[in-house]
Structures are given as structure tokens and as C-alpha cells.
Length: 223
Length: 196
Image (cartoon, rainbow over all chains, first blue to last red; front, side, top):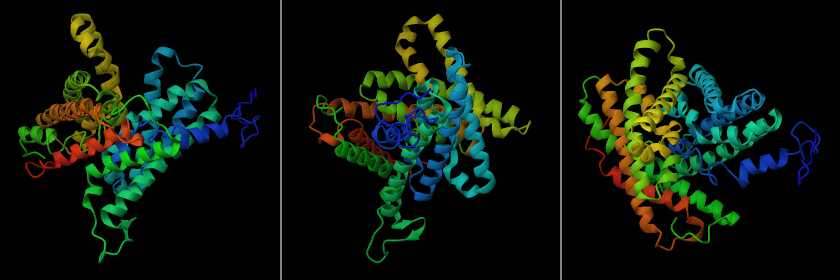
């Protein structure tokens, strides 16, 4: 059942279980249509947990886990799910994976669970996961759907990592809690670890991505 | 949290702990709908209504069903189901009894199920251990605060159509930066009242 796309897949050569879409899928999730910096989905948690690099990476891992799991099961069940109730079925699958991750985090890493607060539970309403399930997993086979979940999770984790790095470094002069910038010459800019810093950091990151890829709308001015 | 007056929580939820500007909740629909003031106000009204009622329902279910049965790990899936069912119910009810209101709010209602502000308010209610009255005050205040923020920023974005924004910043990037500035102004309320 191999149908080769315009780009031959580097992972399976176009004949493997990823239907020849592996490379494209990965590239799309991480860079071309990055869920955060291009599609601007799931930004709530991207802003809320990036005051520390460590929190940002744990959140990235959580989203990757939930997205891969959800895409796998939505794809496996895609032929038996009635169209009218697919949304609630997707939400139930997502919530199950979020509960699993939350329970693991509570069992082995309670401090992190407390720091992330409600934002682990809020992965349920993270538009990235619902979006991938709707747009990709519903119409693709399981293996390539998992790959798509992984790629989007990676793209999300990458953006969170960058924002977390910038905010923790500028806001406290430290990374992972270790002082990097000397306290004798660097005055931490506390604004960066507070709410406004999150919005401004993400705004500049999106602008940077636009500048590199040349995406902009020539007709619109402000909006 | 037993001793804090619900009124204090209401003011705090609107100004000092604004759910959008301090807790980053409801960003997705915020970016999509904050281009015009009238649509922003319409979605805001729907959010206030739904948060207030779902907080009350979720409070009852959590404290009278899940806690006695030791099923609190199921709270996420129960909360999101309650929200989805409530939104569906409201949609059917409004469509049947008030076509005018349905045309004003109808298109926003499906958006609300996946608005993280709604689920976020219920989750904060559990984490902060609010009483029933405090929960309702927080739910209502959270909705009002979200609406206030989205209307203010919609106003700015409407004006900004006439400004020349650097090319890479056009669209969402500049909206983020404006929201950051707005969050800074709301930090000016800090110290007025504080809630945990």
C-alpha cells in the first residue's frame, strides 16, 4: 500500500509503514508548520510554564507523550468512530493520556507536579493535540500518525525550550537553577520571569521565525 | 482559603490575578477573536456565563461525588465532560428559546469547550481549595477578567490596523507584544488584593 509522495521518505524509502510521508511529516511538525511559532496553537502552556527551562522541558515531554498516544489511538479507531461523536471520543482519549502522565509525574516527581499546577491538566484543552487528531490522525494510518504526533510534540518542546532558556537566563541569570551569568555584573531582569516577559518573548520568537522563513501577509498592516 | 471574602476573590480574579494576563489561559480563542471589539464582547459574554455555571457544577461533583468515592484522579475527564455537555445543552436551549441570542452567541459556543480558561478556572478552584461561594466568585470574576482583557486588546488591535508594523511582526507577533504591555499595566494593580 505504498504510495510515494513528491519527496521520497528518508526513513523508510517510501515503502515502509509510514506511507512515504515520514520525512515530510517530521519537517512539517518541527519547522514548516511548527504548532507554536507558525500555527500559534497551545500557547497557554507555552507561556505559563516557561519561566524555568526545566519546567518547559517537562511540559514538552508531557505534550509529546500525549500527542503520540492520542494520534495512535485516534488513528487505530478512525474507521469505527462515528463521525458525529468523534470530538468527544478524541477528548476522552486525550484526557486518558493526560491522566496517565499526571499520575506518573505525581508518583515520581511531586515537586514538578506542584510547580506545573493546573497546566498538566490543561493539556486536555491544548489545541495542538485536538488539531493533530482532527487534521492528521483521522485520515492516516497509525504509524505515520504517531510520527506526526512526535514531530508536533518535538516542535512544541523545541519552542518551549528556547523560550524557557531565554526567560530563565535573562530573568534570573541562571539555567536549571545554576548561576551562569555572574551576579557581580549581571542584574537579573525580573520582568522576564513574570507574565509580560512571556508574551514579549513569544512575540519576538514568532517574529524571528517569520523573518527567517519570510512568512508575512503583504496585504494586512497591523493585523 | 476559608476566611477570604468572595468579594475579594472577585476583584482579585478580575484585576490582580487576571486569568488571561497573569495565568495565560484562553490564549487560542483570544488570538482568533480579538481583532474586533464586537466579536470579542460576544465571546466574552459566553465565557462569563459558562465559567460561572461550570465552576458551580464542577464544585458539586468534585466535593460530593469524587472526594467521597476517592476518585479525584478522574477529575480532569469529568470536568471536561461536564463543560462539553453544559456547552452543548446551552446551545440547544438558546437555539430553541432565543434565536436572537443564538445568532449573537451561537457561533462562539463550540469554541468554548476547548477554551482552556473554562477548564483552568475549575482546576484552580480545586488547587486553591475554595469554598462554594468563593468558587462562584472566582468563576464569575475569571470570566469578567478574561472579557475585560480581550476587549481592551481588541480595541488596540483595531486601532493598529492603521499603523505600520515591521514586516516580521505583522499578525500574531505584534499582538503578543501588545498583550505583554497590557500584562505590564495590569501588574500595576498588584498589591491591591492578593489571592493564592
